[in-house]
Length: 457
Ligand SMILES: *Cc1c(COP(=O)(O)O)cnc(C)c1O
Image 1 (cartoon, rainbow, N blue to C red):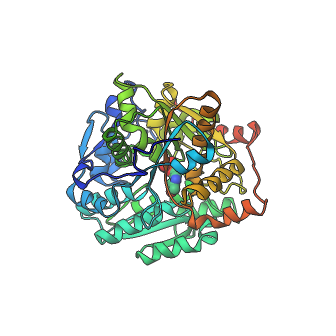
Image 2: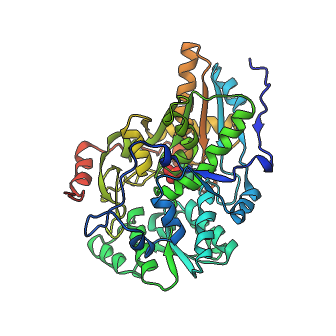
Image 3: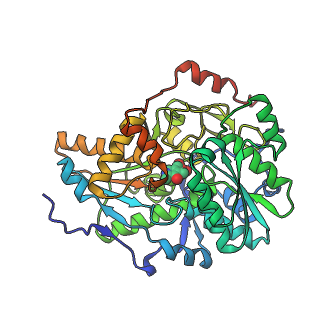
């Protein structure tokens, strides 16, 4: 039994909090591939990107060389309201599992948006405000990103237009109302408010929507409205940069107690929390200073890293966004309606895709009933009701801890607990009622998505 010399929660003092974000691209030998113009297939120039995104964010997006980027004081002050997030030693889980492994989790759910997404939302809203914009547009799936962005926009007095995937809009009315509480306008997608929405509705009447489709609508609205830009809550390089706050705090907290993790685990949707958590550790690995075992965990129903292909693809269904080279299932891929656990995006951050392709990171897929089983096990011993997305990481953390039990190894495992699951009780209900199924796409299903990949010469 552990002597508990490490506190249950490791906090940082305000003066220990990071003053700069870390840009892992600076230490990558093989840089992530550039975004391409969807029409000309040439690398996107800053001017082209600035028609869609805020200027300073474009600079961050294209910067592959600056390792540390200052966090503006206004953002650091906002961070102080809900950060540092605790790094928790999961003593109770360890005891329950009777594992010799030492398990830590970085908990990002202690803010109203309920997830890590606020870390990037506040940064993106800040730069939009600096640029003198009226507002921003975005898409949201389950609603965490939309919630985070509406909080950030109301803080800086910006208008916020959210396109919410229709199925979530209908099934998650409470998230929608949180966004409206913070002053955002929320439109179910696909909608009749955009040309691309109308086109998609005509081609697929009755569709319940997808993230890729909502992105197209949000981009169209931003580029056709004076004083608006589009912002995105995951996948992009800039988002991983902002999320490096997670990894930097984690590393500072571990260093205070001389703890070196063996395994670092995160769930992977578009890759932002995982990228942010592992960035400073990956930097050490890339520079040859230390070695870590990184594991990305994704749903078996949307397996972009484990079964996807590494290719240029559209980021959205309407094919209006730049092309990104990434592990992808094809922009036409829509996960099974039975899939309740989030992480539904068809592609993956190009930074993580490159790191994975270079063999620097492992990826694992897990089925959703196993994920909810782990979620429940965790909730019962650690108290926190985890988001289904986060529970993918819990699943693999428990699996690794159980391996240690067999081998007797005292490995140190760190995982990202990205958020809380209070708005996901319909999914929990399905699980409790035994109505949750584990649809895993067939090779035939996946082939359809791959067939729609753009041909890049
Ligand atoms: C959005 C979200 C994720 C997945 O997004 P990434 O960009 O892959 O981090 C994971 N967990 C929670 C709670 C989320 O809201």
